[in-house]
Length: 351
Image (spheres, rainbow, N blue to C red):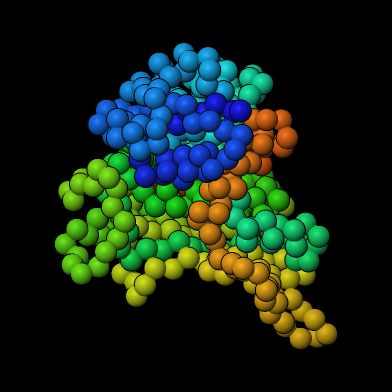
């Protein structure tokens, strides 16, 4: 049995805890949160006896083999590094950190340890992603040279720590953009980034004045505090000539929310969101190829279960890590460059 602890008991932790509880090879033995009432409540809910308000105390427990880190963004790197140095396997939620310097420390700790170290790039584990990856790897799309991804919310600033830059590191770029930048980069074969040209906008705030329209709110929602961007966009150029354009928003004057992820190659194209679809040239005709599968869209619950089960398999020595810390470092390099580009109003080149 793999004995697991979960650090940070906000809403995302449920998507780690439930897959652990459903895995016959895992025993959830410890929980940790700085909110002692929430810690007590979750301990009772999941029947976990070992409860810690300080992750450093949890790490002293030699019985714990592996840890999921589900805390605020600004503590991901510090806790991940500490876990690895304490001899624990680590699954750390995205983003890996909020600065590149922090990411480099975790990367070094992962390289020096003999432990599994995985970043929570959950969209890599969606069934639609797995299926499209098979077609890409078999050459159906040819050489991928362009991708475009959008996650645009008309009203979707969660507030709380999400809108507090000190804890989150930023707004929709680091919360939503991290997912689609990673997904496209992964499907494109992880080419080396050459340059980034990005923009961020802070025009609308958290729009707490809007009535009759529900949206997700963080557990610590604050209708006033907000110092993160509303919107970000970026053009990323890669060393193989390919490019990626991404735009993401927490709030925007638009008719409805939009999620769209598309990739284009010289032998075909693909849409992965809102639903999986291939486009090919066949018999001198442009042809849409649909799939007869149970779910053509991203399934949040399925992907988290697949991600956590993969982590468990890696910890038990049965699989190689699909989303290693080194990939988390590369994505942080891109995210940091976007913010630098937006602030300096110039294109940033990687050395």
